Length: 57
Image 1 (cartoon, rainbow, N blue to C red):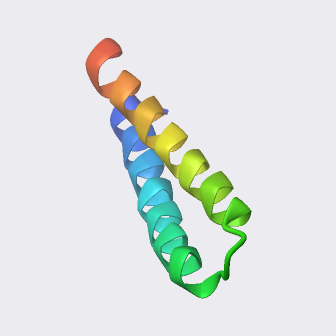
Image 2: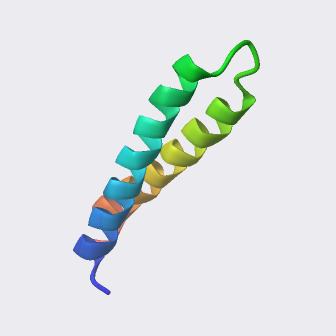
């Protein structure tokens, strides 16, 4: 699998995670633990895409 394909998949997963995070932020009550986990996982995916973009070109 080439790096452009991996980057595209990581970007789609990040966007889905960001959308879910946005929904969870407003849907959850006081306890936002699930929101933080989903948001953190989404940011991790974006950082992996960043590394692919700059270091594996």
